Length: 177
Image (cartoon, rainbow, N blue to C red; front, side):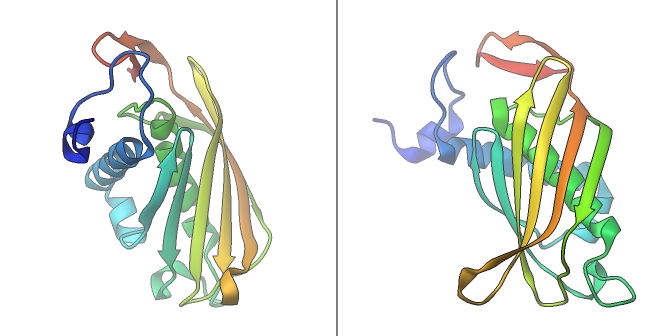
């Protein structure tokens, strides 16, 4: 078996299984590109980190600071929406290693609880379906409390337009247009 570094650099063969390490590296590259191309992510979520990635699912972490809260001191709804938008793209990228993540069609957020400055959030974005034109992603934002107890803060659904071209012959991966 090739060393991990060689595995991470080589594109997967058509139809080959992709390791979570390769998938995580790809999603991190997509996250970095999103931050470079869209300054709102760097401004609002500079400290959000990718914790893990598997096919169709990413887990991120964010410790809240003063820029993330509203006038009442709790997580601002606009920040929640930005988290949803960013992590949705990462979940879609993890589905089939695509480099682009689509355009928003519909976003729905339900605010179930609060989080304050200093609270650590765990964000789980799961691609329920990624089709030829649309992707449907569910996002769960939870506050991590003492002993790892999780409390729901926001639940969201996000639909994105992701029209793709035929599979890339070198990787077997759909390349969006």
